[in-house]
Structure formats: C-alpha cells, structure tokens
Length: 406
Image 1 (tube, rainbow, N blue to C red):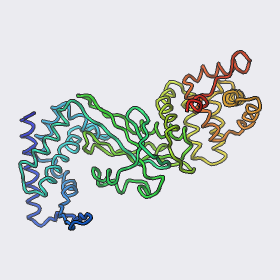
Image 2 (cartoon, rainbow, N blue to C red):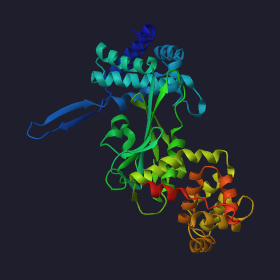
Image 3 (cartoon, rainbow, N blue to C red):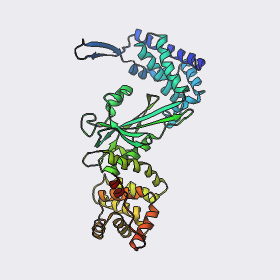
Image 4 (cartoon, rainbow, N blue to C red):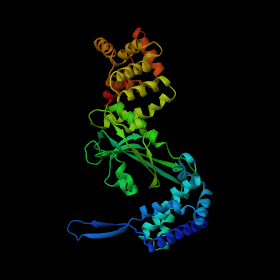
C-alpha cells in the first residue's frame, strides 16, 4: 500500500465524520434523496433510491473543520508535495493552504466514500476504492488536467483541434452535471437547446509529476475565443465560468475573463475546418502582443469596439488602425500601409484607402489577421514602406496563400 500512514489518517477522518453525521440523522436531521427512473426499450422500468449525500456533507463541512482528526489529516497531507496542486486551486485571496487542502482533498474523499456507501453506513471497501483513486492522483506519474467551458456563437460538425490541447467540440449530454451538479445554474441561457449553443471549448493537458500549478485556463481560453472572433467574425463567447478537473475529478470552477465571456452582436456561424486552421495559426501568435505594446493595443481596441456604440466604436477603430500600422506616423500613414497590404490592384488599394478613413470592425479584423500571421509587425511596416516606394513587391497577404493552398 502506498503511504500507509496517510491511508490510516484519512480513514480515521472519514470514520469520525460518518459518526458525526449518523448522530445527526438519529437526532432527526433529514438526508435528502432522489428517486430516479431508469427506463429502456422493451425492458421493465427500474427505480433507484439515491441518497443525496454530496449536499448533506458540503453543508456541514465547515463545522467538521475544527475536529482533531481533520487537523491530523490536513497536517499529513501538507507533508505531501503532490497535494499542493489541489490546494492552489482553492486557496483564494487568503492563501490558507490548510483549509484549501481540506476543501480540495478531504471533503471530496469523504463525499466519494459516502456515495459509494449509499449513505453513512460504513463500508471498508467503499473507503478503499475512494482512497485508491486519491492515491493514484497523488502518487501517480503525473496528472491529467482539463478545463471545459460552454461556447456560444458557433456550431461545429466535428471536433475542431486548435492546437496545444485546446479544441472545440459538441457538448455531451450531462457531461458537466456529472462532475459539477451545480453547473445547471452556471450555463448560458438556452445552452444545449439552440443550434449555436451546443458546443464547448476544452483544454486538456498532461502535467508532470511534482507539478504544483495548473495551467492558466481562463487566459488560454480567452486567447482562443479572440482567435475565433478574428478568423470567423462570429459573435463567440465562452463561459461565463469554466469547469476544471484534475485526474477526472472536480478541481475547481473559475470565471472566464469578461472580454471572452461577453457575446458581441452578430450572426452565429459554423466553424469549418478551413477557418479552424486559421484559428490554430492565430491563437499562439496572440502571444506576440506581450512583447509588442502597439500590437496589443490594436487587438484590445478592436475587441472592445465589438461591444461599443458610436461615436466610441469609430474612435476605438481609428486608434486600433494607428497602433497596428501607424508606427508613430499617424492614422493616414497606417491607412496607406493597410491599403497596400490588403489591395491586390491599384483600384482595390484606392478603394481600401477611402474605406480606412472610417474603418469598420470587419476591415480591422482582416488587417489584424494579416498582421498576426505575418509574425513581425515592425518588419511588415518596413516592407510596406518599401513597397510604396517601389523598392520591392507587395507582401502577399497570408490569407491569399491559405486560400490558394486550400
């Protein structure tokens, strides 16, 4: 047996909690239950009496915390470095590691044991099964991390791989409520019932043994949402919360970043495989903005403009254009460069120059996609200036290259 001392300490904790709950039930407390019907074609209907122990335990978890067997179990867990990744998900602003370990490890262990027992009649084999699952998570070769959030504004025909463990897929019936019973009140209105509200965006990633920090899922999924908006012009939004799991056990519920959780106006669209390749190319390139403040400002202003009304929207878009290609020379220079980049013929460039006087979200979207896919914004500005001076050929827009390849 792995960590026999920890096994014995956690067993005493569960036994103590069972004794407390049994005494409460004998004193008149009610254990709620569900009466579930299981029917199938051409077979008798079966009914299941299922005690709802999760809510019962969670409602009394804070009262158990002061018991000595809880303190002993928490102290032993804090000596295990592998438990820290669980604690970090629940520490919150107080950074109370002891309480975090209690909420993230001990309470789920207690709930798992009670659910396997079907209540609070102790069964050693039920505890051993719950312990083995915990031990595999704590002492295995690594962890399997996952985060999933509802996605609205697009539909898919098949799973869309966006790279680095991020994908968009159709939501499976009951997948969220199976691990997070409280999820029903945290989903977007109409989710699971409307054509553009049937998808989830998911991050899955293996973690090495000894890792004590989970991926920054809110930031990574927010970048993915921005990339989808850039590639499709769809009114995409994720959340409002994402659901995290570790080794296929509930790990946490975190808010999605507000800019990604708010749906801009627009018509829903289908995320097809071609545009998915553009999304997959754009998503990692958004990190370029971390080292290029002007590009970051252009992206932020364009995305904010999606939610604003006039005159603020037009001002944001003009500033975004200046940040993208102005390079200190002003919006007029940025317009000339943008027209040279996006226009294939002299007439197209002249038309684009006129349109860039009052740029739209769609026009800025096309421009930002090109800037990101070229990779080096400053070098692109120099190349466009040389093009305007007839010193070199016009840089071929990446979107044109992708269209030819398809």
